[in-house]
Length: 304
Image (tube, rainbow, N blue to C red; front, side):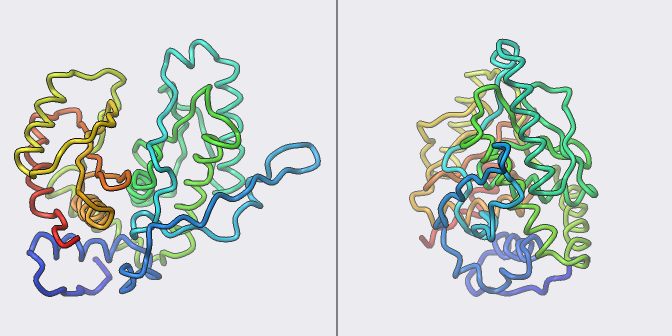
């Protein structure tokens, strides 16, 4: 059951209308009918607060949060926050352990979620209440420009020995605090059931497309994907490259936001940096690239 009523918008294609309807299910009810009012403007960074022992009080830093990037608000990070590499972790194991401990402490304080080690270097495992919560957090955090992976009914958050308390550690803790705030505080049980049902329907139609997260990449595969996407959409690829993502410049922030949200509602992970959307390089790019290109063509916002 998808609980939100359909809000028909004139002059929209069937594909776009379907994606917009799905977004009504994914978004907390406080955004229903008012996403046009949401602006991608940050409230500014909350200052660190310390206790008498010099420890950061991660549970006493935020009175409110910026709007969700899923709703059109500003992503928490302007550029993607990525995990540490296996090489950097092997070179500084003690520092890496310290970073993991501080992130775990902060997540438990700020989001009331337990954190466990991951078998994969560079990641921490955060068990969720159920698959729907994990899937929703995956999509919401991706759009905030913090690396995140799905692991059954858990998510994986990034860590690395170069992470600093006032920067990257704070970024990870803030984004999980922000997204769990909206999940727990602004989504009622009936909405969560609707989200679980939507994910089930989407997965039956086509699997969720997400990054492969391999640390190495095939340059020929990347070039092939870039050419396919450029030819199909007419959009230019970005100069800023990531191993697991390919960027396409939509020409405006408004167009990038709308297109990103519609793609995520179509079971394709997507995020935004300024006017560009970033699409995942999947584990089977040759098979998935055609679907991504077709979806962008159908869902691209040409109005901005």
